[in-house]
Length: 312
Length: 73
Image 1 (tube, rainbow over the protein chains, first blue to last red):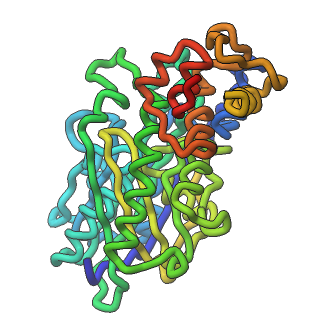
Image 2 (cartoon, rainbow over the protein chains, first blue to last red; image 1 turned 60 degrees about the horizontal axis):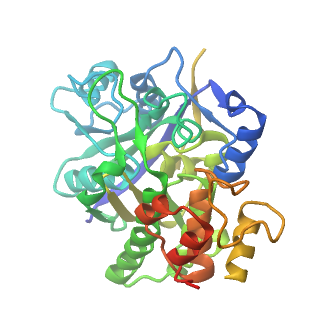
């Protein structure tokens, strides 16, 4: 799609840190070795909406005359109304600004770029796309497959119409046969279920294929890109996917999981913020659904804001 | 099979010779739910096989694991 500039990227995380010590020394050491996650940030008094608001304010600055606000999350504070509408009120956005949520997780940054990018490409002046989750609030404290891995974060990406912007390319896909492997039922007592081995099997096949398909469709090679920014689920899977995708270490942007864990749809923007990754980037997200998405974006002119921390 | 057992021992950080085809996964020190992802990465890297998660969960012995990457004795 054309005429879509990525003006700002900001990420907010809670101040509260949680390490793996609750698992006991032996298990904790093994968990850290297997996943690379030493600690993560988790919400305490603050809410998911608070994180989104902080990221949004950082990205927007004084701007309020925007055309749309889209929130990508699977852990909204309320089922009704959408988080986007709550934030519309909190931020004081104009009544002409449309607001809605998209339900997507670890692939959600690409899905958000697809939805918001098309809105801008087809005529809206600007859209604020927020993507993030607080999965720490839906994991069982005794589930080794999920509790040690997931952290909380919210990202804000401001897209604006610009006739001279480099083209924004996004491709998303899904395979509903994987739906049962990453699941959270309705009900306040339900906890997230994840079959980690099934996720690995899916990602090992889908991610290299999605990257290859995007390169093929655009005629780009890895040499044409300044960096590849994958979703950051855990260190073992990340390194495996790097090798499968054939990306050199210096072009494979990581550095999230050790201190923040898997922060779902906020992981790609968090990697960009922590590494100040600029240039022509290939992004690849993947997760529950199954779902995945790739994007070629240009952040050369993007304001990449320093990490925002929310809490007491 | 010998080479496979060596890869497995390295993965679970146990001395070479710990795994034999007959060893059950319940007996195998260092093998637990957290090892699955590492095993799948090793299987893909060393043997070029993306192991089926469903079949991995059905595996009972080291020989079953070896069969997943196409090693049968």
